[in-house]
Length: 484
Image (cartoon, rainbow, N blue to C red):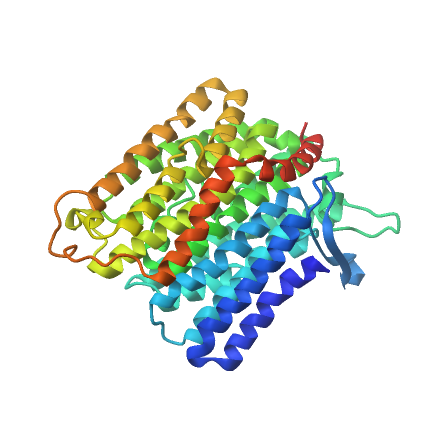
């Protein structure tokens, strides 16, 4: 029943926030998110490292079609459940420093978003996965469209159309797979494990591969399906950007691991190289554009695009290194990118600009912000003993095992990442102070409470990676049986 509690509690907390409203909305939302963090933490520390689905529930949903409301947590989903539980209260806390119109609606949408994300990462029924996959789009759309920047309507409409378009391909593929199944009672099944056992022709696997790939590539995003991402990240309010970059893009990578690889292994053998090539192009392309950016928020957006390309390449390598690396890197990247966007928000709100050319000398006034910024930056550039190193090392090992040339090109992410991140730090924090940075105020107590857990996680994952890897290894090994 733990998984059911994880799914339902954010919804109940959101409804309570809407009912109470007013100035208490953010406090209630934060307390609700802390309870959800406690539930996620209990799942993490109670999890038994094996390939089974634990804390599960299974109820009839659409009985006539043998479609069930079924969810649980295994080694593939555990780290993402923890990530969602950890980041949501920090995102809510980071929003305390701003005043939003209709705060009850704003914070309730964040909690509804959390519930949908938890559903994606725990669903054991394919149609339930699809339901939550689409449901996650609704709150983030309204967050971006209602509280975003000047161009928010056009940008969020493009984002909505892109993701709905891709999801329709996935729905068609799931319906087709559903009718290919047959249970002992003569009914069809939408259980994900039943879809793994289907025997599909090469032609079927080809078109199903592309139906899934387009849906998940848009969500991650992977080149050339990324054009919605930078503008959406920049125009959205920072808490929505954190949700998008920190958690929501992980739905695409998770979908590839959970559905695409084990259902159409021959399709992956035929087209996996194409997917890796597109991913590697995205790594280099995103990094080069990030180097050229003057807007701090857009720079971090392109860095996120580059990092997710490496995750996708590692997953499509179909190796244990690549898949485990992707799971750990999703956790690490979520921590780092949320911290980096919070740094960007603090700087932008204090200087009234996001342009690096107008910044400089901030470190003279901000010893605490400088330390937090540097720790998160070092994690982002994969310095050894930080969280980013563990995932990137495994991902690159997986891509090298698949193809040496692609692995070498993907490895450029380490060099490029150091270039654009250190350039960001140098431009913003060092040099002479400017009119907008003179007297810059250091972080406050509530702002530090956002940074401290993130920095702890940077070192925890980097110094004791086996505390996470041991939880994912049995499930990944089991998954590879369906792929190879």
